[in-house]
Length: 214
Length: 246
Image (cartoon, rainbow over all chains, first blue to last red; front, side):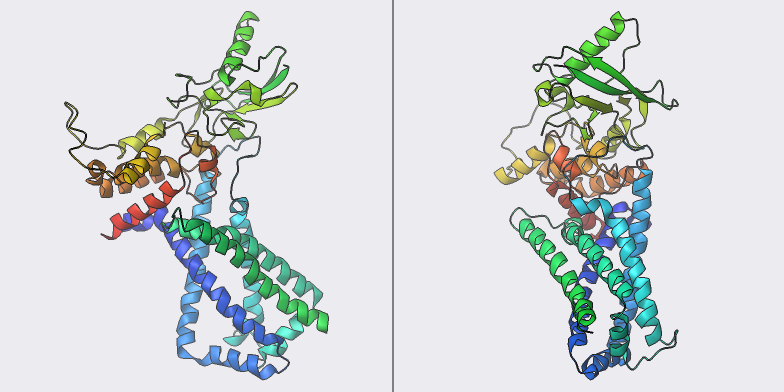
């Protein structure tokens, strides 16, 4: 068992499965975010209230947090091993044809992590009562933030980074779990690119609409 | 044609090393890359200078001995060839060619452009074989193998163990190499017997030797002189998980 957990392939599998879980979560979160565009705050707030009180969601929240931590921790361990595997770098940078964003996954992940920490301070910590704030009106909280040009800029940059991250991550996760098929892999790659554009674009559109309409 | 070469010179593993620039005035486009290097070395000997060291053996792309990092790509700009098959017609008059040894913790530099690739032998010793008694070749049709599976095994089996995959990978990972061996045997009845043990010992050995982890960048597939496919890595992943949970 220890040999299984310690293996590089096991760590990669964990990163891939956690990543796929987060990919699905992104879609759910986006659906709720779209409620911010409604002029009536009560719809979004009751959705937020439901998320805060429902026991199933509360369990899910813990799972989600663990998945995030595992995804980040395992990726960092693997990345450090990867850096150590080539102590002397080539003087001429690679000109091999590769999946472009695959080279920058850890840095893109870092940008997303910074946003995640910000996000926790703005919403999650208020929700669980660690930080003072109006936990009954996240609609107003979000709208206030989306009026700030700096916050909207950080938000947009973070989701562009997420888009680049997903561009490689989606198809890479399938390869890691062992799914590579002559017939279906091109479809998986296409869906990955589509998902990496549409989902972050959906997230970005919301603050932009709110910012421009104020 | 005229060529400027920037060649990595390093006296020993402990030496820091650095590039030395050489100019060549009369390079034929019909030369192969090692033939061009030979002619430079002959000039260096005539000038009483120390020739530089580089590996090569068969010079027909089957032994896997040669291997240089040329202008940012293992085996240079030509697709699907080893360094010895690289033709000088791929370069233009006046080009500068930078040549580096392959870089990986598992491939320490011995001298100049020569690296120690014993780690690949150790990977094979960890399970890249089948345990069978030697003797006369058995009747070829005694064990039926489907055409599809025989093709998969053959396409993986053409790996010459040159280490291009490690050299090209940003993580210096040997996944394409061991996955070719695991795949070749996993789809054949003769190799299936030890498949579970093989995949586990080879992966454990890869980790122990300090190779990096695969991040599915695809550089190995793009540079492999034998054009071994990434699908082998996915197959090895499946074999590994199956072996661990069964």
